Length: 485
Image (cartoon, one colour):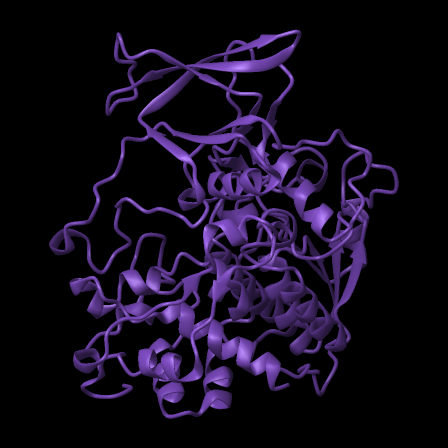
């Protein structure tokens, strides 16, 4: 694929970032795209691998190598190298509804499994993917794909995150009348309200929503399904009104830290903090909630994952005096042992763009107590732990903190309201039970996909599950399906 000797002749060259001092002044995307020639050169590095792990087995299970949506990466790399960008876009969209999302925020397990990563020089797959789709939008190649024949079947999709959007778009293209119910004011789920604008500006979502509306998808905003919110829709009635229902609401129950002092003000979940800033950027009302701001404060982020990094970047842009990130896990190795890990996703030290903007990172740390004055948090009491998370005597220390953000992940979807009213079975982890074969819940016409089924995961997995769930719904309604995987 690409240029036969490209990997020998061309060095890896990836996108750069704007300087930290410049990008901290605003919430805009700060990745500097490569030129067309640079992208084609990078695509030329793709080898004619005997087994292209980059797209071969990622859909089997988490932890297996490659792309969860099975992007045909060598094929569109070759098309880019040959300067056939429109065909590259068609190929890319044949497996991924929203490559502009994954091209911006996916951790790129495909690059970890690239054969050239054996030598730490993988093909810049994520950068090439983003270049293809952005070029497709700029050239007007991404037209609405309206179904030639309508089936007369109605499907409700509850939740408009990446799983819900992918499911809805595929079902609409199969000819079904699709209605998406979203409790917030706009579509996108965590893409809209969790991912900061400096990682992905929201017009990237808006143009996809417009495409989906042109394809016949109807979005119902401000429509909670289940629960006691005024105007909430009865999920039992919805299940009766529609031929099929897809539950794609995500995993929204956050992991808490129930230690002394937890009741102090100034301690918040990450997903109470991040959506507020996204709403400020888009000039969407906050809804009368108490504002959470990091400006002029010492901020501590508890949790070392992507959500924690998003809290760091947002806090620094708001003018935090300092940001410290605590992780209970030990510091990973600086580099992996390729002989043991490749082509799987390796555990190694990674520094996100937000962490590089000025955060202090502490590993193997347990927070034991919050301390405060006049009901407001002022300090954290911490201790170092061993590899079994047992405190190490004599390693106790304190950190100043006027704002603490809990970013320790999500345990499962919210059970109250929608799920309890529908009475769908849950698995042992508290997620909605449904098999990978048909994504069908314990109720015959109710299906589920994304984080609500699999638990907290990646956007690319949500897209994959949304597509497969759409296939199962189409088969359930029509007896067969022509939708691609």
